[in-house]
Image (cartoon, rainbow, N blue to C red):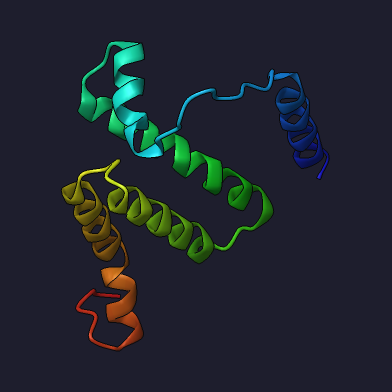
Amino acid sequence: MRIRTLMISAVALLLALIPKVYATDEVNVLEFPNRLGEMLGIPLFAAQLLASTILLALFLFPTLLLTKNILAHLSIGLMVFGFCVAIGWLPVWIFIIFCLFLGLMYAEILADAFGTGGGAR
């Protein structure tokens, strides 16, 4: 419990120290990966992955701190990845591979739950 409080305090202190920046022009969130790639000098695909990972971390880290329920983590991850695909930050095939990986990860658990598991015990 002390570590969780310490981590939350560190994040609050860090956020308090970051200077506030206000945009003078129009802000287009859909172009964030393009601008990130230009500023860091990386390809667009890498910038899309980085932008999606930043958004995933923004929503997933508090969930990881507050609960130990694996279903909550997976649902947050799926929603964030789906949102990133919807706004064009992430290619669809990465989302499909992620869903297939989750399906393969839980296939044996579901097969055992329905009594059709072929695993020897």
